Length: 199
Image (tube, rainbow, N blue to C red; front, side):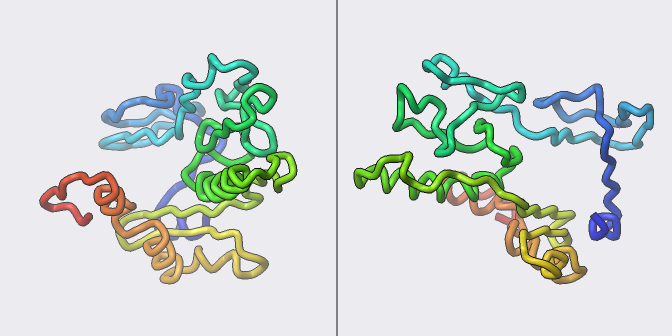
């Protein structure tokens, strides 16, 4: 947080924007907060997190959805192991202690890959190590193409490394991508290059 403050980013906690809900569109400012404060802004870009899209699973037997709209799973990320023991789910829809961020998939995907390969070799799922969410998830906050702050789950005094001026910027740029992965996903999806873009 200190690094973000030094970069001129104000973080407001314990407050909401009552006029916005997940999926809200961009609009002109100002932004009115739940405590009555008015934040001057030319443009307000809602980044309220994801809404889990669980509709593909809700008609399956034994699938349960929690109050946050996420699918309740067992220790191996299975939503209905009694009836469909080979069905696994991951990402934003899974009710684990992971935050609804892309970072959760960085932990879930390798787990699911290893678990599925073991199951394909005939191992019983309940004999495999269970999924464990991040205890201290990494966080990368770019504040432009060259600046940013990172938090990595490193031991002891190393936890401050990503927040240091200079190194935090480089770390964020290297890990997050100087173009915020736009180029990477444009290539993966076979999307055409757009004049003026960096990816």
